[in-house]
Image 1 (cartoon, rainbow, N blue to C red):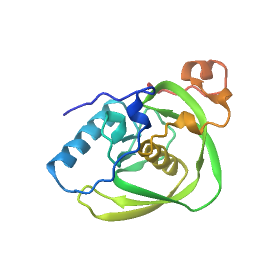
Image 2 (cartoon, rainbow, N blue to C red):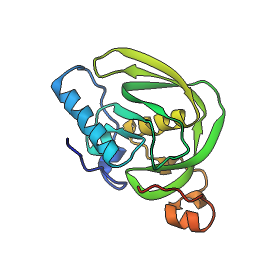
Image 3 (tube, one colour):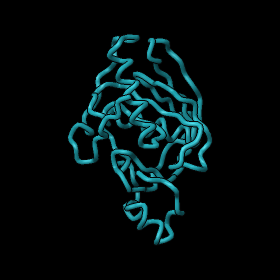
Image 4 (tube, rainbow, N blue to C red):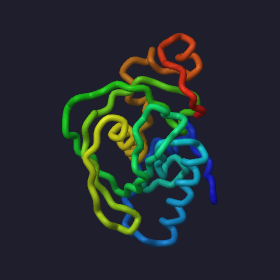
Length: 181
């Protein structure tokens, strides 16, 4: 079990585009994925992108059965998504509260497409695709943004909705959540 440090906003590595993965089903990729899952679980994350632990490869993981940071969210199957592609299926945007392991303790209302299809490869190089909506679609878009050097604060429309979770809760903007970034 290897839990890696999660880079925080301000680290220039989070703003770099990631490289396409060309070799699958090998010990190096398996170790990266094991470390990512260990790190995500230790942080109660819904997902994690390789750049968040300092690896500039187009690799994201996500999924959970239950997550204390998102108690009202529906389950998302544990997924390895390599070299992802997102296709927007509806122009409908939904603003919801987001947080990020790389921006600890903060939340903001972030617009995301509500209905998408994503495709990519699993760790053995098998291509797959899924059509998803709502929170599942939000998580995928959030994690894939990391691969292009984008953090959720760059997507915020109204900076008055961006702040520390505790301050947003005490002001009534954000309902209290049992989560600890």
